[in-house]
Amino acid sequence: MNWPLTLELIGAPAEDNGWIVHFDYARHEQINILQPAMYDDTGLKWLLRVNQFSYVTNFPCGAAQAVELTLSSQRRPVEDGCTIGFSDFPFADLADVKRRMAFVLKAAAQFDDLLHSDQRGQIERSIREIALDGGVR
Image (cartoon, rainbow, N blue to C red; front, side):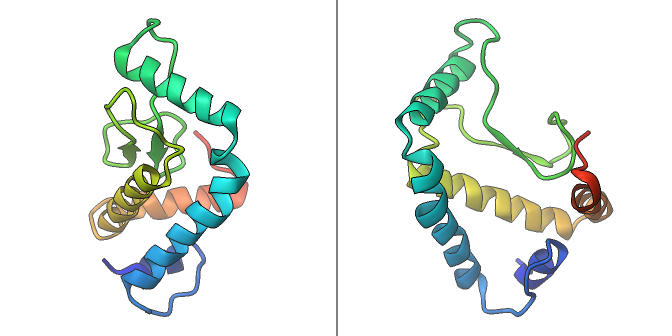
């Protein structure tokens, strides 16, 4: 992975301290910021679990959305490699930091792969759109 390039494109410092340092940034954010601010909330935990179960089992029919991260400015996922799904397991728990970190790292690796592919231009355009006006399509 070329983390300095990835970080530079999203406006972060580009010095190369190795991927472990960048993993630590993501881990710190997930554990020390997002976990207490969002994922420790009992109501959100319940909603995430119910949504996950409903989405995977399709019960009730069509009532839930997949937990996904879209690595571009598009609103809905398309089959272009820019969307990372959380899990197909009905009891997967996004509030569990270990499961969420696996999801975050999978998305980071995919983002880095996209930056080194023929889709780099699309990713750069999406980042610019988001930076300029929210860019949601």
